[in-house]
Image (cartoon, rainbow, N blue to C red):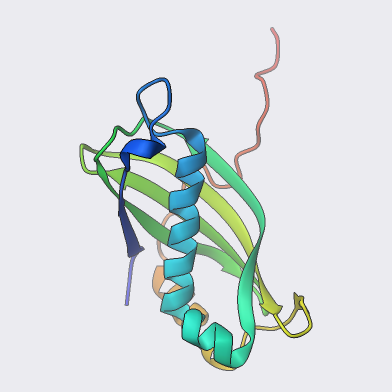
Length: 159
């Protein structure tokens, strides 16, 4: 296993288009959220495992960058990179692409927390989930840090 994970594809629906004729901003987040579900499946926190083991991921923080518009009917996909992790948290970076261009359409940097759903509190990842996360992080260790990672919203200083 090496490189970015491409786990989720989704076609832009007619009802997702806004008055400007492109993907409504909220639906970018929907696509990224659906990617988190695919990522959870990949690391062993799928629907079946969540029901059996009582662990899930909650999103603590999200930062979205809208880079280019996406039009109706376009197939999209998301690449996933783990930027960091500890016993309970995952710092991930998602890059959204659409079929009409090789340029990223949007990025989403997120902090995710493992939750014991019986206690509804943070808890360490289950050992098998931690092992999968560790393996992905090792495989991605040589990847460059995305340019938008850690980006802060601010107006440029006045001159």
